Structures are given as structure tokens and as C-alpha cells.
Amino acid sequence: MKTATLPSLRVDPELRAAAESVLEEGESLSAFVENSVKAQIRYRKTQAEFIARGLAAREHGKKTGIYFDADEVHAELRAMLAAKKAELGQ
Image 1 (cartoon, rainbow, N blue to C red):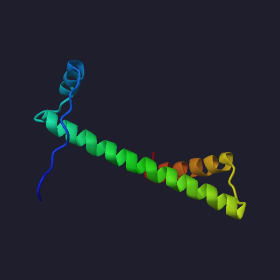
Image 2 (image 1 turned 180 degrees about the vertical axis):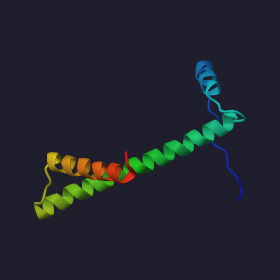
Image 3 (image 1 turned 90 degrees about the vertical axis):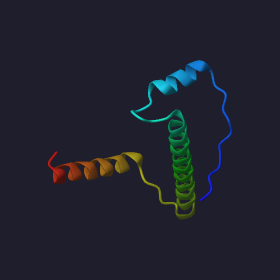
Image 4 (image 1 turned 45 degrees about the vertical axis):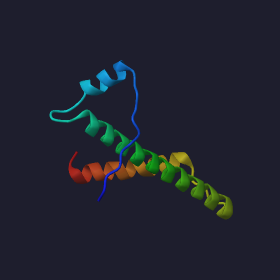
């Protein structure tokens, strides 16, 4: 597969130094930037999907009139977490 390039990026020397200061052993600045772009893409896709699910849930609630109390949902999630912790012996 052919590769493509991202646009050049001019930054303050302080930002470049900060990025270089956190590079892992053998990691290049280019690899760091590429991984950062990939992580931001994943984050934004996940965020967009989360918002879409929330909007769909809102529409479902409007159509059905069925809503769930936050305290009840939190209690159910706490119970699920406690059960999983007990299962794992934590």
C-alpha cells in the first residue's frame, strides 16, 4: 500500500522539546506524532458514537415515555461492579 504524508507542522520550540522529552526508547518524533494522530482519531470517533447513542436514547425515551432514574442506574452499575470484583476475588 502506498503511504501518504500529513501536512508539515510548525510548532514552538517548547512544544517540540516537550514532545521529545517523553519519547520512549527508540521512538522517533515522527512515530510519536503518528501515534498521537491515531489516538485522537480513535478518541473523536468514540466521542461521536457516544453522542449518537445518547441522542438515539433521548429519541427513544421521547417516543416510548420510558426513562430511567440516574440513581437507579448508578445503583445497578455499582452492583454489577461489586459482583465482578467478587468474581475476580478483589
